[in-house]
Length: 120
Image 1 (cartoon, rainbow, N blue to C red):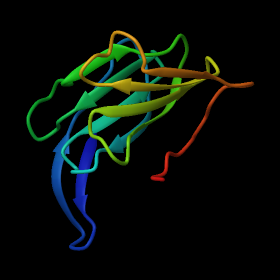
Image 2 (cartoon, rainbow, N blue to C red):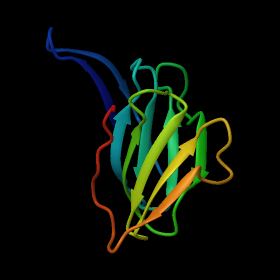
Image 3 (cartoon, rainbow, N blue to C red):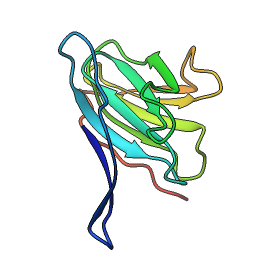
Image 4 (tube, one colour):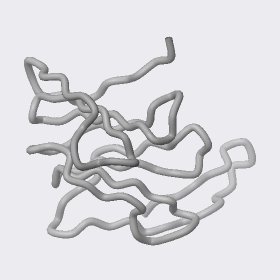
């Protein structure tokens, strides 16, 4: 289940069931700058972008890596840009307007568990 909370009021705003097939698991969830979209990474190599207040299905779903994706986040400056890191030893940047291939791919010396992106 996915639950949205108002932490200041300690109040549940919304509860939603997000599911994956074939026993794959979510590995990370992150929200965009406007708190309207959620991006998820999972063990099946797919990146999914959800608008949980609008639909039970992802708005975008695309194959991003050859192995489990461990981390995914929105860009701090654009709601169209995502970054993902995987056990396939890559960090990739993606534009949601064209997800056929990454904008950029960086090869790392080992699998990527977590990372962060900061504003310059």
